[in-house]
Image (cartoon, rainbow, N blue to C red; front, side, top):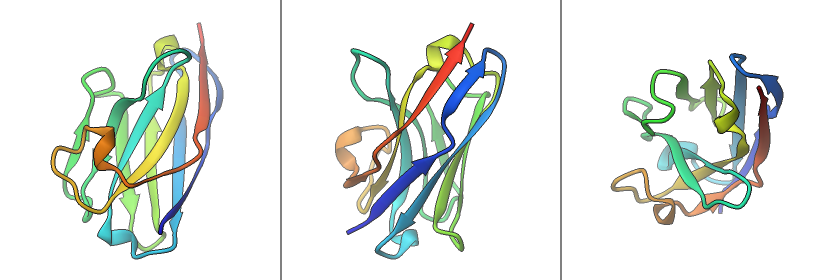
Length: 124
């Protein structure tokens, strides 16, 4: 069992930055690949970014590539999502997720545990 707690969401103007954090507890953090997904109002979960267990490989949705950076600190059991050049279309609830067995990284059904989400609102 893994518990995930996101933080760092908020209201920001377009062009601004936010850094999301996801603190994990309960099992060995390095057993898990980690991902970020987001859900805009009335829409389904969408993949944002993912990172391998060691942190050596990262994956991004085309819509955030070059603006968002995922990283992890395995000593602190935390994964981060640095979001720069934010746009109104980035407005969503952002969820952190952990996967014990991973293949493609982009499919939400590969992830075993989810956080409660943190809301990001980008004003124009």
